[in-house]
Length: 444
Image (cartoon, rainbow, N blue to C red; front, side, top):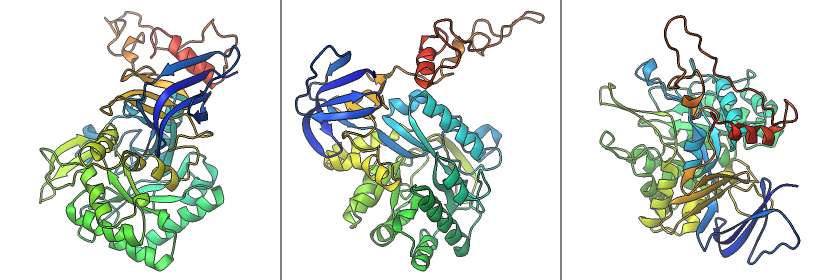
């Protein structure tokens, strides 16, 4: 029998404001959200009184370089893989992996493996098949068959256009690619979107507009991102959003000491809304762990940063506190809207039957607790579940450990995770293996 968790007196934003409710979690699902829930009988259950704290669906980040990205500027600029606790501490419970510029030393296979790892460790993951270039990088040889045959593939991307780093595909190539994704999605019952990286070139969304006009493909198939990269692109996005397709704002692109051009994400969303773009076609993603190169007017690399997944919740809070959007609307751009776009029917909302992905905040919207698939991942604002090697310094034989390589001739034990005598068999199911990993003194 799965362990039950009863969250009492939560102020539920589902993302619609439901007021004060109790939330009953059984295993990985929400089984009830009611005003005053009580269970009769001697049922093992954790009961937590949230005392009116704001409670939201876990965030869905549809643009995460989970296996690392980048490479502009040389091999030393390859960005690292993302860790489980970085994801959950940011309130993200569902992530979609992308490659990016580097489709040579990075591969879709590597991305898929990382997605499986993060899924095992506790969150929900999907990937896009492809990289910047067209023809793009796939697992089976065709985007369509990737979508049909590989469960975690829900779309194609990120495909670069209007960018000096793209392969400068023409209208026919983009039309064929979008058609492949759309038909693959139909056959597999998936979203089948194409996620487009938008660059700084002056033609902005013109190529996508021509393809959309020519093909008549559904508007939700086209998902251009980084639309707040510069004011001109954002302005062009208003007409795109009203007539053609989705608009994805990047929370990790915002003005700083090196970037004086981009539009702050929360302000970009308000500009789209003020321009007449319907709220349900606007989404926000982080571009986490992707490199953030800054080039001067001659194309010289002058600075390099790395995207942070924490910006997704930071910009959501800024929509509430600085831009004064209704809480339900502000939260929808990284929850319900993304779930609808990607056809993740069990995600992005708090209701019975959905996965138990939740964020609990204090009255200043600071994240206190995060549940992913019913499992408590963050408590008191700190991660309580970590990825397998996040604390690898305590694994015997690993870099930084006391038993690290010593003098020549000394025997060094191999860093390894062995079977446990506490388990009845050597091949337990996933829940048992996750529990086993938490018991190890050297693992997180």
